[in-house]
Image 1 (tube, rainbow, N blue to C red):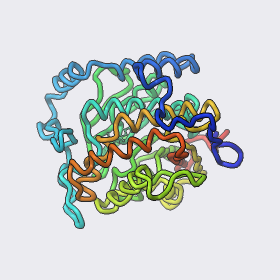
Image 2 (image 1 turned 30 degrees about the vertical axis):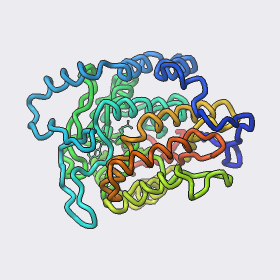
Image 3 (image 1 turned 90 degrees about the vertical axis):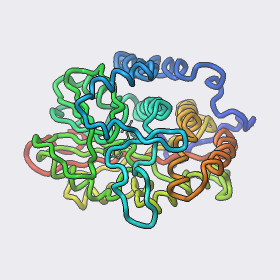
Image 4 (image 1 turned 90 degrees about the horizontal axis):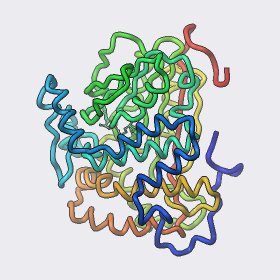
Amino acid sequence: MSNTDEHGHIAADTTEDDGDSALGPVRCCDERLFLREVVVGGRSEKTRSWELASALLCRNSAKHSQSLRESLTSLHSSILAFQEENGRTYHALSAGKNTTPPLRSVTEYILPNDDGENDRLDLQHHLDILVFEGRLALCPKAESGAKQVLDVGTGTGIWAIEFADLHPEANVIGVDLSPIQPDFIPPNCTFEIDDVEKEWTWSKPFDFVFARHMCASFQDYQGFVDKAFSALEPGGYLEMQDLDFPMRCDDDTMSKDSYIYKWTQGFVDAGENLGRPINSAPKYKRMLEKAGFVDVVEKQFKWPMNRWPREKKFKEIGQWAFANVDGGLEGLSLASFTRGLGWSKEETLAFCMNVRKDLKNVRIHGYWAVYVVYGKKPGDKGKGKEGE
Ligand SMILES: C[S@@+](CC[C@H](N)C(=O)[O-])C[C@H]1O[C@@H](n2cnc3c(N)ncnc32)[C@H](O)[C@@H]1O
């Protein structure tokens, strides 16, 4: 499965030349309703989970947040005490653990954990599912046989909930630094608040460890892969899904002087300064092999940055990808650029205004490279290679 043509390129739509709106029909209506309609229409067997996901997307955030807090009273208050910075909130668990040079950060994970970011994560989940043609994961274990599943950095828990819903025989644990998961969940799904960069304390081995959109989260990606290897039973799978930075382009329409390119390169520089690289996805395959995984598979996909492609499916993916970034631009940028590059809040917000102009320019044929990498821990228990 791949979302590019046989040459690996996406054809541009030459009739799209207004350069002014990347979303087309989405721009002036309720984006969430539009997106839900598109996806449900194309994938009826997933209706139940889409309904659930949509309910999550449209949840009453304030009410949700209140009930979540009530159900987590047993947790230490430091976990629940989100940190405020530049008008956004960030996780408090393990805050300040990175005290090594060159830059010291208040918290390490660079994206907020507030309602705006959580809605973006849920929207991004739909984008992933669209690109993977309805599949939550691509490794053989995801299709059948998984019994003990760990979703690393579960975020709003949307992936874990859908996986648990589709696989009632599996026990699914979602773990995250932030308690931002709902309490209306399937009985075979639980959430834990923990830092996976610390020692893993789960005693029962997993047969499927999943990690999606964890770029810029870890200091040591090989260390994470090694831990997942140890926590898996023989035959178990690790699957990682991630974007690569900076943004790519297969023709000469995105100059290195453009705001959009400089913005995505800024994340690479910030990630290096903060010691949390955002461009590790192309190295995942090698890391899995180094850890001892076998039958390691890497698949690459593309998310056009807006509706610039000619082909309908790519255009649709581009509309989603645009909504994903446009709606979260400031939240995505603030911590990285202020903590990682030393910019002021005002400089970052002014830069975002220019980035937004490029982002919706359909004459720039930029795209996000998406990597899916999975591998099997050798041994007897699991089934074999892809396709078996
Ligand atoms: C970009 S979000 C992705 C969420 C989810 N995987 C998804 O695809 O929707 C990354 C998540 O990883 C969590 N995270 C980052 N570092 C972590 C760590 N060391 N331990 C546990 N969770 C972590 C963040 O709190 C955030 O919720």
